[in-house]
Length: 354
Picture (tube, helix red, strand yellow):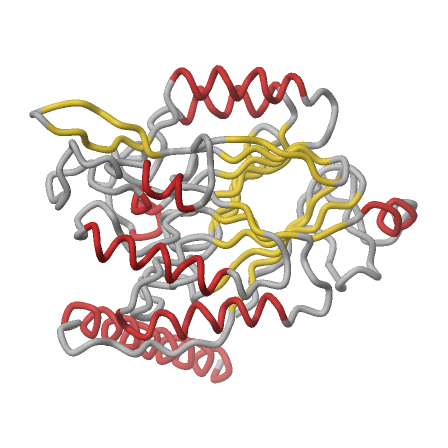
């Protein structure tokens, strides 16, 4: 399923580049116009790839390789891939040896990309930090140590520049002390927020894009019609969203790319787009019952403008024998689709009979 394209700011991307369409908002101009020269000079694309949850289970290696092959096969090759977190299946409640194997598998398959890639940490990329952790706090690889070392990262958040654009990669896995253990909170924290403000300030007037794992905006409660799901529910949204968005707004950041929910959402607030990509793993390589098929987002930058498409790749879930809950979720999703088709046909037939 191809999600409608979105475009922002001073105009749409040029019509000749990958056929991107004009946006539907008032702040998006048509694809025809005077911007085609900048498109030809300094345009580029990159891919936002999040929530791969690489594991040996559920034929996930084959699924992730299919994802990588889909990116490599794109007619216009991306300049790079920007990860969105949860690269491995889990480190929070997984034995260290299994976690290490997941990292090795992730790196092995990701190395098949034909372009460079940059990592971003998610909550499941951390070793331990939870009530179900299976590693001692005294272990030298505890927390983010192993993943940072494996990915050759000095810090869990950083920035870089590419063809006149400034990119910031944020870390939403925040350690909280309590009950003789460390747990995770979905927040950036004061130190990272301060760093972010000065980093964006140093970038001046360059157009800017940021990426984070846990979303600043996520409407799962409204999507599911759940009145008990609070807007700031403690797990799906950053606890310091307000502080983050004020920094993004005052530094004219065009786009914040998000993950974590495994479902596509595009939210616009105060001239910043908050774009959540589908999980590359769909529902953890067990279907698409979270709401979006397995996929990724292709982002095009042209001059000081940005547009994107949400793309999918072909993958059929292949569950393990013990995946009873996942089979039930898939059955419920299929039943819902059948019911929606039945209702649509009934309503269309009623209209035609008038």
